[in-house]
Amino acid sequence: MTTIAIEQETMNYWQLLKGASDQVKLSLISLLSSSLVSKEVDVKTKDSVRVDIRPEDLEITPFVASIGKSINPLPADFDYEKERTDYLIQKYG
Image (cartoon, rainbow, N blue to C red; front, side, top):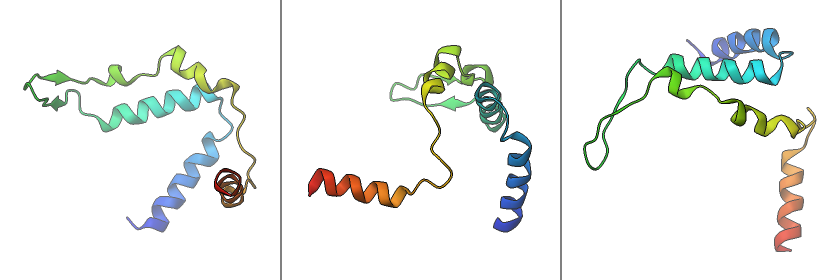
């Protein structure tokens, strides 16, 4: 699939979901992440201990979901480059 087709499909889904609450978006992120992980994943450590990661292990807890609630989103026209430049000038002169 080409990049343009992927971006278009992504934008179609975003149009459906952009008005959803933060809790719904976080739940969707959790479900999407879980769908990318097989039912059990073998992870080898130094001691060759087997670790099983299940989809339910990736669920977002209410505590984690509450962390960003007080953070206001940046406006759509936020100028990242200007803010970065201003920060670097202020910090390093």
